[in-house]
Image (cartoon, rainbow, N blue to C red; front, top):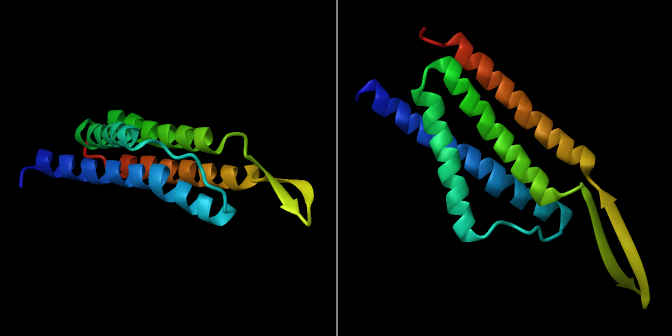
Length: 137
């Protein structure tokens, strides 16, 4: 199999992984953990996001390593921006009725959001150093 075809396949797989992690897995897990239905993206828009992540993945693997790093980091930044836009300010507020009394419950999960984003950036840095170490130039 030609080397460029192999790199394109790896790029498509990495784009699908970034898409799945940032747009599917993390929002679903957070909605299950927080027991709060999050406003997810419409199905039509998900295809556009998938196309963006897949194209960035292909660009990051087919271009020269140092230029490809820019697209790898860009994928993680776009995914992080998407998570921030879904989760908003990191404060969840619910109005509940308990024994006939109206109660406002507030949960702040900024720390959880920062941990998730921090882990994403750590993986981005590890990926950058891995690509620098294995560059063929």
